[in-house]
Structure formats: structure tokens, C-alpha cells
Amino acid sequence: MLSDQEIIIRFLLGNSQEKIGLSAGVTRQRIQQILKKSNVGKETRESFLKDLLNYVSIKDLAIKLGVSVGIIRYYIGIPLFGRNKFISPENALLIEKSITVLKCKICNNIILPPRRSYCNSECHQEALKFTNWTDTRKKRHRSCVESWQRKHPERYKEISRKANKRYREKKRNGI
Image (cartoon, rainbow, N blue to C red; front, side, top):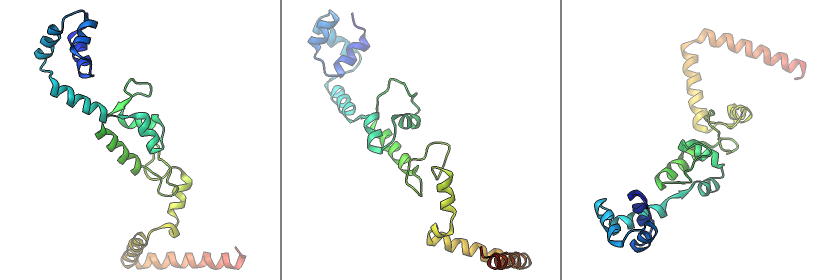
């Protein structure tokens, strides 16, 4: 004998009332009574099947995004060896957005969790080079430097003298 929940699930998955009745050992009329009691009808079944068909396989999503299943499960919060193999389309879109945001700005690799902007320290060092900055970042940096120079003219002169001295020494030594 199947429980009421199992009967409802089998009906929602597309089994006929007669088929469910045969496997449960009850009549089709009893199956109808159970479904009526739980307010499950043809419309509910169609919407359930429509939702079920829209669900996305975690494995397919991982292949589409070029990441491992473990990364997808990490973002969802499912244990690595959990039973859930499908996720809703809304969750799939959220994961796609968060994973595309979490790509390295230098080499475009996927960034794994504790990191924020770069996949490793080499990419971080590369990004810090002034030549790799965007024009807007360079302008913003120049304006910050100029405002600091106006606020601290003595300190700026001292730093400039030291930098010029180091530059002349390097040039003299051929470095």
C-alpha cells in the first residue's frame, strides 16, 4: 500500500489513476478521492510537469559555465555528495551571474571562493602595474595624487628629491 504522498507524487509525475491504483492495490475511485482531498487536479499536474521540465541539471550547468559540479554545489549550498541533481531555472540564472562575475580580470579564469578579483597572486601583481590600468583609473589616480600634492607640498618635495636621487644612482650604476 502506497502512502497518500506517494500516490500524489506518482500522479504529478504523469502516471494514470488506474496505473497508480494497480500498484497501490486500490481502485481508481480511491485514487480520485485521495487526489480530491489533497486538491490535486489536472491543472496542478500540468503546472508541476511544466516546472519539472524547466529544472536544470547541475551537471549541465557546470558544463555550460566551464566549472566543476563542486563549484555549483558550493554556490547553492548543497553538499558535494547530496541527492539534489536538479535546480530551478531561477537558481541557475543566479549561479550563472555570480560565476561570470567571479572571473579573473587578467586571465579570465574562474575565481574560487576566498579570493575576490584575481585567481592568484601573479594576476594580482599584473593588475597592479600602471600599464594595465584603464584610462579612467589612471585619471582617477592622477587626480588623487595631485590633490595629495596640493595638501602636502613639503612632503611631496621630500619624496620627489629621494626618488630623483634613487633614479640618478640607478642610471649611474647602469641598472
